[in-house]
Each structure stands twice: as C-alpha cells, then as structure tokens.
Length: 162
Image (cartoon, rainbow, N blue to C red; front, side, top):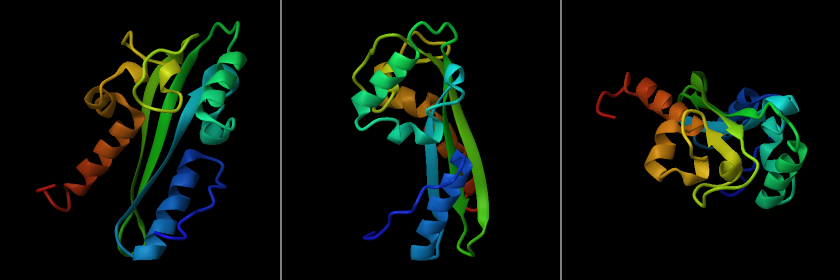
C-alpha cells in the first residue's frame, strides 16, 4: 500500500523480518508475512549479510564488489539466508523460520535466471549456480523456498485445505 516503507534498522535478518511483518500488520490488522534475506560469506565475516541489497549501488556492482573482495580467497563457502515472520490477527508472532541454502562463491558469473547474487552462488551439491536453476528447482532449493514451505506447513495446522 501507499506509504509502506518500513525502516529496516535491525541488526539481524530476524529483526528486519519482524519490523516489516509488524509494519504490514499495522496496516491491515490481519495475518501478515514478511521476510528479510541475504548472502552471508564466511571469509567476509558474514558480509554482505543484512546489507546485501545495499552492498553497492546496482546489482552488478554488488556482484563485482563480492568478486573483488573474494579474489585470492581460498575458503569460498557461503549461504543464502531468509528469515520469515508471520504475525497473527491479534498482533502476535505466530511463527518464524529461517531457511538456509548453502553453497560457495565462484569466480565468474554463470546463468541468466534469478537476480542479485544468483550468478556467483554455486549451490552445494550441484554444479549449478542459482542463476542456472529453473524456477521450480530454485523454489525447492532456495532459502526463500525453504522458509515459505515451513510457513505453509505451519498454516496447514489452521486450515488443512491450504
């Protein structure tokens, strides 16, 4: 809705997810779901982390910054992390879940699907980047897909027809 622009000033993905979920709940006073997510690279101390969307001015500049910071780094392990928070109509946190997709940062971009850091994130156990996955594959393997499926499983307790 117009004017919906919560300030994401939390220190964690959980904090920012909660901020956004409450901002949505304050508008409709009904079930509200929000997430916060990003890329966490071990060798960079978890960066870009909660600053993933603001790590540089453009998506390509963000990729370039990560690739530059990772030059010559041996440990390339990383993970995408997504925290989802569900607020019930009474304004209470009903459920939270953090989905994780593990992988590593490759040295050159591959693939054209997805967005953000997908072309440089090699999914653990596959020889594909997130940007090389089909939409169905990504929905099953991604951090957001895992978090959303957990929320859906939770909601099925209220309505088995979901």
